[in-house]
Image (tube, rainbow, N blue to C red):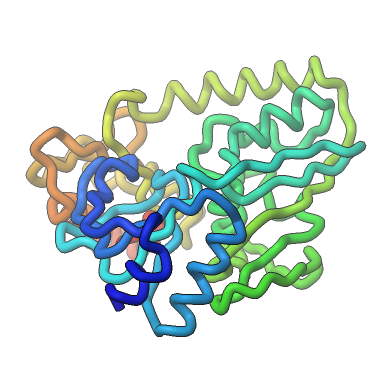
Length: 296
C-alpha cells in the first residue's frame, strides 16, 4: 500500500502526519498516510487509487466533530479544507457551493445577498459538506430543506449529480451521511438583507454565549433531540453531571453537551467521560444519548 501511494502521488502523500493539529480537540494519533490535494481532479484520482488498491481512507473537513484515538488512523486521510479551491456562486435565489466551504461563509453570503433560511445556523462550525452529512440545523430549520442538487463522488472517484428528491433528511441525519459530497446547489427565499442580518446577529450572540470559549479545545458530543424530548444538555444537567471531569476531559459549564479538553487531556479521557455520561443519563432517565461526534 505504501509503495503505491508514495509512487503515484510522491509529491502529495505525507506519512505519520499528526492529526491533532487538524481537529478542534487538538489531540489524537497520526494518520498513516495523509494528503492535502490542491485540485478536485487530484482528489478524484486519490479516490480511484484507493478503490483500485483497496486502501481504506477517511475524508477530513474542518475537524470540528472528530475525535482521533491515540493509536491514530490506518490508511489515507484526505484533507479537503487546506488546499482545495473553494467555490461559492450566487445566481438569483440559488447558491452553488463546494463542500469544503465553511458553513459560516455560506450563511453570511446568503444573508448579504438577501437570501433567507440559513441565518439561524450562524456560529455552527464545520463545512457545508459536513453540514449536509448530518443535516445540521436548529429547532426551526435545517440545511437539508434548502438543498436543490448535490454533486457526489462515488468510492471509485466517478462523479454523479443527485436531486434533493433523492435524498432523505431527518433530524441531524441524512442519506448522504456516507457519501463523498463535492458540492451542492441550494435554493433560498428572498428577504430584506438588513432584517436577515439583524436576525443572524441575534442568533450569533445567543449561540456564542452558550458555547465554550474560542481558545478552548472542545467539541459537541451528542445529538440534541432525544427520546424524552429534552436536549442532551438538559438531560446531563438533570442527572447532576454538569462540570463532571474524567482525567483532563470536563463537561463544559456553559453548555453541558460540550466536552472541554484540558492541556493534559487524552482521547481516552474523553471516551471515558462520554461513556460515563451515557451510563448516568440512561440509568436515571432511561434515555440513550446518541453520539454526534465522530470517533476515528
